[in-house]
Image 1 (cartoon, rainbow, N blue to C red):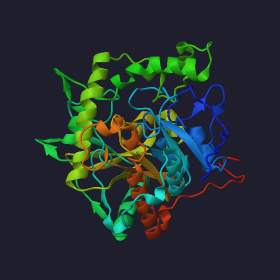
Image 2 (cartoon, one colour; image 1 turned 30 degrees about the vertical axis):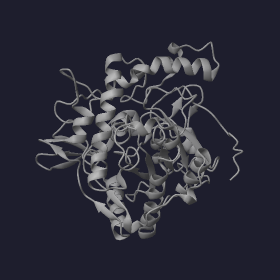
Image 3 (tube, rainbow, N blue to C red; image 1 turned 180 degrees about the vertical axis):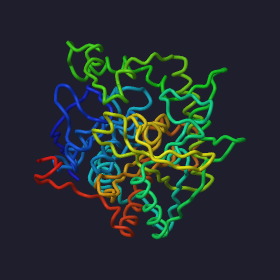
Length: 442
């Protein structure tokens, strides 16, 4: 394959605006399928929209807490957020030292695999892949179908606390159930197991939210931004070549995405260097060990989760009224509410596992069928490190990192092909590139 790629656009590099993808200097990016009704996702929404509308075959995106996968969900793309440092991050200072990672948006899994081979110097055709009947795919309820922070957990973003669990909207859950049924009918083993318990606590919940630094409970979801100011200063100086821009200018240019999401708060986070060290050294190790137990004990190849908690319309994101479900885990009662802010949509499904180096893929599964016709995505997640690996050593091995995700990508390809063959309603839907109501080109 030729490697003489040509860049066709580059924008919004420093004007962070969460999942609405708008900026003061250049306006609002249009979503590919529904134009002005839906957001394009963020923060790589321009990249994803360009791919979905055939302006580019592939886009390089950047994911701190979901910015490769959120735009893929919104635009009906495949969004690949690889194991950290699978693609080198030189020149990508980002926002948080161990979170930021370059990824890809494309219209097919085949395009992503082909490009990954070019970028990392291997032939995808030489990578062994299992048949669908050999795949074991986990579908745990916690923390992605029933999403909550355990009581007493560190909860810096005020997410739902046990016994109140957030659940994806009815439309997204319908697609999730259809995907599980299609995989099962195709011959894959759909494994309905949870992470093991220690006492009365799920070990993943403990690793994510209940770890103690001395007497204080600390999670990986706030102090990880301790490096933000330094990283963005480096970005302004080395990358943008814009000596007239200051950190104050960057903060001032960040627009709130409605009442529920103000990225400037993260930019100015009052964090602790000691707790950042605890996150990097202790919480990453604990997270990887807990994460891999379900993979290893159940011999899983993949985990399948809902893509997000709700569809991101401009109206609901601006007013924090996005529709989702809420479950009382004691009584079992499930209700529908419309109270979500944009960060709620991102937190558990894309941000919660970002401190761990593992591969993630947003997969488009068509449009919801409740009259709205909005795109829906599901995520496949992989093991942290190659089979039987322990700890984080793999994440420092530059040679291994080039190929560590190859089996994951092949497994996702097999699963997607089988899923769509069994249930064509789960196939990606191309946007209508014609003038019309709510269309990008109206």
